[in-house]
Image 1: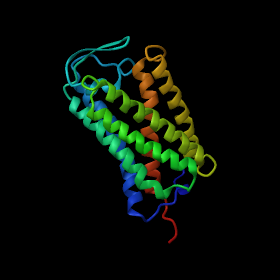
Image 2: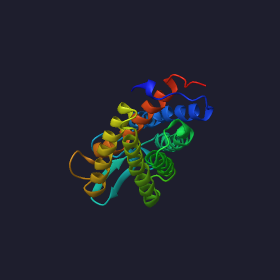
Image 3: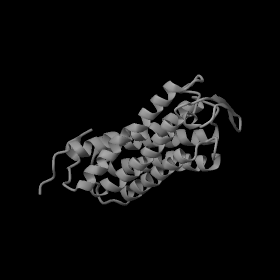
Length: 221
């Protein structure tokens, strides 16, 4: 990423927001820790991320989907969902001043705040305890984040090319994967891999964007 195209502000809120985006790395750390502790076979292509946050051992079914789950460190995964959502939303709010004043960027950042709230809901409402709330959180957390990244990418396409192109491309891929997941989740790549294509690239992009803001040269006073 061309950090020189993202002049750093002296505003401490922007720096804090950028740090928050880098800290969304906790989403990946939580998955690894919970997956390693799983006492049932867990597949990255077949199984949903949310299964690592299910609070009871045994079979889980939803529509035509069936799985046997036992995630002893489900609290770690659910805590990672909540922390990721908080960092996502605070990052969007904190870095607001560092972005160009464009309508697409305003909408994009607002969608990321909404997505953060959705991610928090996913962690507070595990799939086996509150499936409807969990589904709503996933809808906001995944779909909202993909759309937010897509809008930011489109807005930055000509003024910060690498950040813009990568955001737009990953956003389009994420939206397509998310729609595919909603319509035919049991076909294609496998529900777990499809969900990961829809969900995880957003955080890679946000970590890179946060790092770009932190590493950029300071703007003239």
